[in-house]
Length: 466
Image 1 (cartoon, one colour):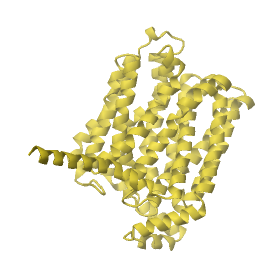
Image 2 (cartoon, rainbow, N blue to C red):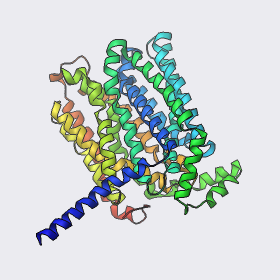
Image 3 (cartoon, rainbow, N blue to C red):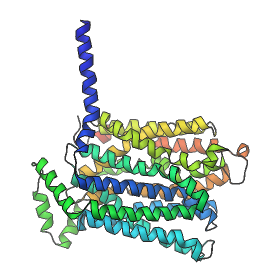
């Protein structure tokens, strides 16, 4: 009997190990074009998170704006990107993946050059020359990223099969966050030697590297071969809709896009808008954590605040593929409830006060929750999109994220000035109340999802669930 139980346990262990490793094995055998897309996303993640993590302080020190105005400028960038996705997400559907990526990266290159040069060209202060030039730079980044993000996820849909899709989306999300962690290693020494503008010039160079990756690794031949391989491995994919779209005029395509917008689906709208409350924690990663860790702490944490601000991305890189492999067959809606709860709840840990261990506990636990729900949400939006409409669906699905960035940037500066003010000893701050309020806001999402479950599951669209 013990031998039978041992064999059963061994078989169960092998099954779990296979479920965990097989998605990685399948993804490892994908195309050069998908490798190029992933590499580009790592570089862009590094550059985007690196710039946004320093942007508020950049506007404080170089453009001479106060915390509220600096927070507004970060909000213009982050919220502007999401708004741009709404209008520019269809670009990849109309002009193709490779061309969309090259245009978007070129726009971001111009924008980052203008942003970096702004303190040396114009006068500082609100609406001074430096401020205006910096905003023009932000505009270039906004327009470019509005095309880039939907294109990247449309690329995963194009370059993966049903067998590799789930891990493809998870790896894209994880690799972007790997890029998001790297500024914590790169930025401090460069910043100490050459200032924030020196760091920004490094990111300009990395944007050039991203253009080279798309141009040469994702070459036309590589894309052609990748698409042929996907078609060969997925012979049951319906090509009729593709042919129908190719024969449409521009006016007919526009009507088709409007007809297929999911805005009439109240469940879809509730689902994406209820996420706003927990998504405020994403926005606080760059609107609040840099100032919180540099002001409310002393010593190692304060001196190396970039490392802690960017710890979430490296944890996401490690945890997301593992969590996805273990939960890919779980019900999407249940994963959303559990994941958002685990992400929101640890915010109350920070309400205990600034402490090295509470900071690490918050970052680790909230990241587990993020890894559980965020990639599944992105995959769900991409998969319910009609063929040739993935880009615009990603833009619509991200619209509440636009509202999150706008709303959070409007009040984050006020909370910092009142609870974690600059040039104030940490003992005289009240960061505990700030995080308590933020925790209550974030908890609205899992509570709302739970209360609406019976209504939602009646018409909830899912694919590939076991």
